[in-house]
Length: 332
Image: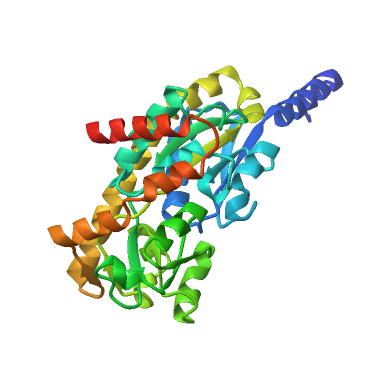
């Protein structure tokens, strides 16, 4: 004898399954880095961490390698809802996050932990104004201070004169110009070939990116000064967050904000230190280390950077933001 569902029960079951499927939500998490890139891996680790705590109605999926959009488009993708969450470099979008750009001032940030404390303090105190009004900020942090990677050794600021170097932002280019170099905006995946073809002589960047994009093969010299740091963010579409079930919003709240930012900063600094140790031990690249006089020379060459940043800002809040950032940095 074959058992058959009563028709009404079958219809009700199908309807329940349909409703459940319709209510389920896959959140699209965008990263412009390749899948093996540090921040793509970090995002995936965070996804793996919170997924077991989410309800069956919510899941997250990483879209790495710029599948959803180019690096400068990430903030707009989130605001438009084309991505629910994205890894964003605020300074890639000129004028959108001006006060966040205080992180770029040379001498302010050495490690990610310092920059992360600065930006989170400014955010919590309202000093960043309405820069993130269109988003839910899941994490706000920074890179360590950038090193200089070059085809030929650079020991003193004067060695930069006439060089063309990859720059991460418009302000970063102005910092390079203070030392007689020219900043060239080049997407991360194209830096290697541009150095190889002598379009640029090197890059101001992080050691992690140096390894990810194999720049040791074309720029085997690392000047151990610290230039700008880049502010970084993980931003979420506000409507996407608001649409989550209450229990899932609680999971996000518990695993974002300072908690996530400081966790990422710890990973960033530990990775940076480990890569530097590996590179030094391998002996395949040349570190141009600075003595006291060398450090003073770089500081002198960059002494006008803070005033240059202030001159590029509109309104009266920039000076107060810079002062507060310096106070926080001094406490770290």
